[in-house]
Length: 253
Image 1 (cartoon, rainbow, N blue to C red):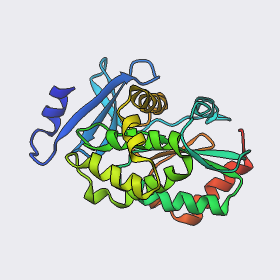
Image 2 (cartoon, rainbow, N blue to C red):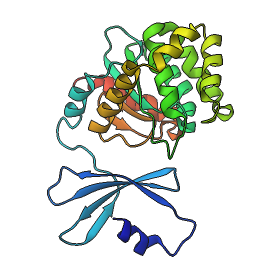
Image 3 (cartoon, rainbow, N blue to C red):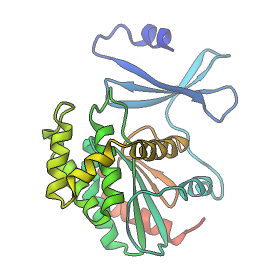
C-alpha cells in the first residue's frame, strides 16, 4: 500500500498520508484500507489484489431493514446520555473532544433533543490517533471519568473542552482539563486519579472498539436509529429534522 500511494501521489509534495488500518471489507476479494490525507481527511480505499485496482468511497448497508445489524451492535453503547428514558429512537455519537467538527455539532444535537423529546442521545468517546489529534485520548480519559463520577457535570465539562479547544495543547492538556473540570463542578483530585487508572483506559478502549466494529473512522460519526450520518454540521437543519422524524416513524425497522 505504501508503494502504491507513493507511485500514485508522490509527484505532489503537498500530499501526505498515513495508512491507519488494513482489514477485510466484508466483500470477498476486497480489502478495506483507511488512509488519512494531510492529517485530516480519511478515505476508504477498497483494494483488489487480484485485479490490482481500487475503489475510493464508502460502503453502505442495503436491504429492507438495512440498519438492524447496526442497531443491535449499538445496544452495547453505554456512554453518558441525555433525553427520553424510554426513547422512540436512539442517537449515538462517536466523538473526539479535539475535533472542530465535534464542537460544531454539539449545539445541533441539543436543539434536536429540544425538538424531539422522545429521542435519546448517547455520547461515546472516540479519540482519533495521536498523529491526528495529540491530546484527544487524554481528554477522553478525563471525560469518561467525569461521566462516571458526576453525570450532571459531565456535559458542562465536555462543552467547556469543546469551547476551549484552541487553548489546549499536548503539553498543557492535564492542567487545562483540571481547570475546566473544576469550573464544571467536578472534584479535580478524584477526577485526575481516575483518569490515570487502568479502568478509564479500558473504558475508552471499549468505546473505541465498539466504534471500530461499526467501521467508524472519523469523528464525529452519528447513528440515528442505526443509520450512519456524517457531517451533521453541514446538513440543513430542516433536512436533519426530516431525517430524525423519518427514523422515528420507522422506529425499529
